[in-house]
Amino acid sequence: MTGTGVAPGLWGGFAQYLYLHPRSVVHAVPAGMRSSLASFALPFANGVQWAALEGEASSGQSVLIFGCGLAGLAAARAAADAGANLVILCGLKRENERLAAGEAFGASHTLSADEEGFEAEIERLTQGRGADVVVDTTADTSGRVAATAIKCAAPGATLVLGGIGLIQLNLGEIRRKYLTIKPVRGHSARAVARALEIVGHNASAVENLARREFALSDAASAIRAGDAETSPGLLRAEVRPWM
Image (cartoon, rainbow, N blue to C red; front, side, top):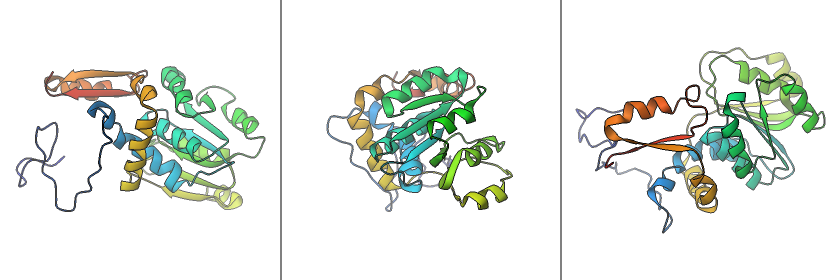
């Protein structure tokens, strides 16, 4: 996002060389891991940060995750690895391929949030209690996901909300249930390190994720292809400068 007019100019953006600031955080990629797999570490790190580090998912808990993109899949894996006994991954009906991938990443149940009876099914799966941790990875701007998260939360639950924009929250219900709200963005170095471990331990599942390669000259098409509305089955669009 930084123009080449800002010294020293080598800020990445598909460049062959990259300037590293003296305070840059550098992660060692495990020996033998291909760059195509290592590149999943950053989007996966968001899910790890939000579910495991901010949400503090732990043994015996129920975790509800909205969004079945890369962050959502990583959140499911991180929650399952933390010992959660119920991991529910939610998407939309058109995202059935993404939801199917969730089963390989630790989701015990996958649901379509736009189907009738969705909230009732959450209540049934959690035996009427609601979810102990709710994670929103959708970047929703309407407030609908946040409102549903509050409804589906158990008393004392932690809600990790990645939605963006000005939204209204039901403060009365937050108070009644004694909920903890954590707005989030991005990830920490600790989350990236854990994401690299997840990629390494689940290499075959990561390899099977639907993705498509683009030449550098077609980078604009790659960006458009990454839109879940136009390409609901595609999880990753990769730009290969030397194609």
